[in-house]
Length: 205
Image 1 (cartoon, helix red, strand yellow):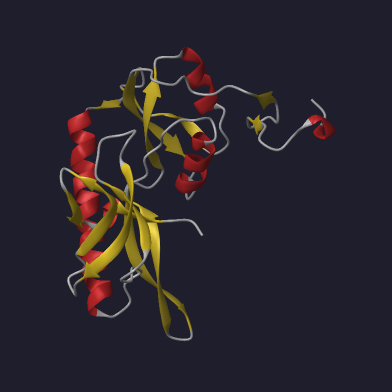
Image 2: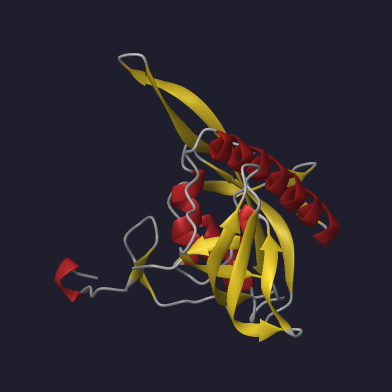
């Protein structure tokens, strides 16, 4: 494969070989744990998204010194060097994950069987992440630094996938970080819904 033969959208593995493999749609998945190089969790997750996998990197937030007495907030992986990944049964998926740059291997039990996580365990992690983020949003709101403003157009996660994203406008938010949104379309006979900050994503401009 020559460099001049590559086109925008082509995916390469760590050795530079071209691949057009994509994760099969609708396949039954089981959650596994991918071990990554230090500090590369989010970068590896983006590479896995490029082959249509759905990596999950739970985040926590930390305030660090930024020089001259200033501080800034950064997002960090809740589990450094680990990515939670729902794997399809397709055997090719294992090869493409292992050859993704920044990946060491899958976490195993006794060095033999790949470790797995139940859906209940994943939901418990998501719940904890929401708790952490809600406290952060409350703190930002009290400091007048909330990233959300009344009138912002947002996507709201209210329904199960693939119909989970609904267009809305922020109707109101209080000093505890809680958000009320006004949906573009009615859902169960109402448009106004209270949501957690984690359910809200900004509409790309």
